[in-house]
Amino acid sequence: MVRHDVPGRRRAQELSVHLRGHAFLFERKCARTYDASAGLRLLLIFLALEGVIGPRLSLLSWLQLPLPPFWL
Image 1 (cartoon, rainbow, N blue to C red):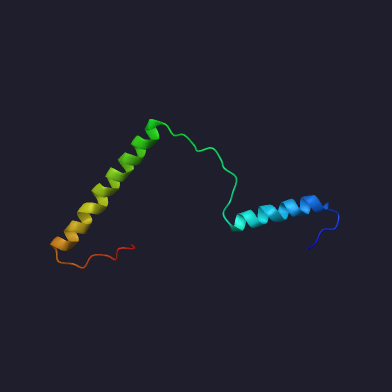
Image 2 (cartoon, one colour):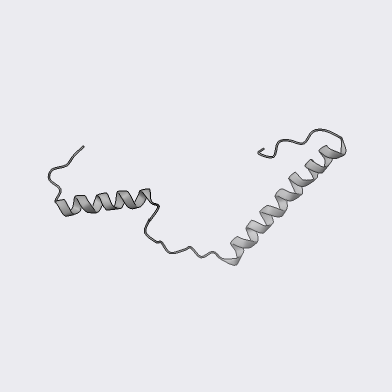
């Protein structure tokens, strides 16, 4: 749909934004800062998952059952 009421400069600016999006040239945003507690929570989640999933995989090999596919 073409809008005729938009000035030429604005239309060119919108096109520029569109083309920058195709080239992944987005505006920079400030990086978030996280507390140390967030890192600790991620570490605890990782350790819990390793504790749940890790032994299951070794148990399967110990019982000589096929391992699940890697993508699972």
